[in-house]
Image (cartoon, rainbow, N blue to C red):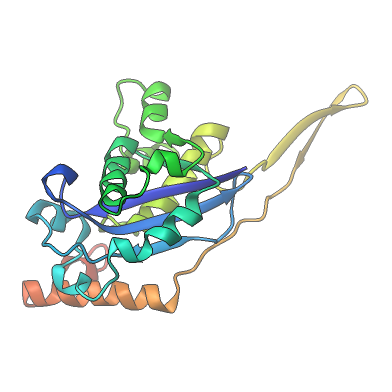
Length: 234
């Protein structure tokens, strides 16, 4: 079964008032395992981000001005997700923005492009009623490290959500799937433990360069060294 964990960053909260997608990140799961086949773009929204949104994602207009527009990557995105079930945290938000972008291009809305949409926020509320169910809260609950998440980023958040989704739906606490397999043999309990292969996806040189460009842009805005260059405990 092919699944895509998807996240976006946007200029604001409302596509109806002209807010746009500025980053989209997709992580592929095949039979519940990470494949490393990811889809990731920063996008030029042709407008500034709201101050509140900028504080969340840190993607400045200057950084985004030479990035492709959504229209440039729409076909590639639709092809990437077409045969997959899509997993999103708070799906109405991201789907609303994707629908708005696709409608501008005269393309079918996002749910018609995919094999279904799973909202992990709905799942989390059912599993943990009355508790905080943000992505950060779920990472803490399932023991998934998000210490490197100083700013929101679509690809990073999609990677974290993939771990959260697997933990919620299989009771595991990491991507070590089927670590313990209990079964009975000859009338006695025989417990065998096997570690599943864990695929670690390192950032590409281009992604590292883009990350450094974001930090440099923030340095210029604060006229010094931005908060996210400081080590924990400084």
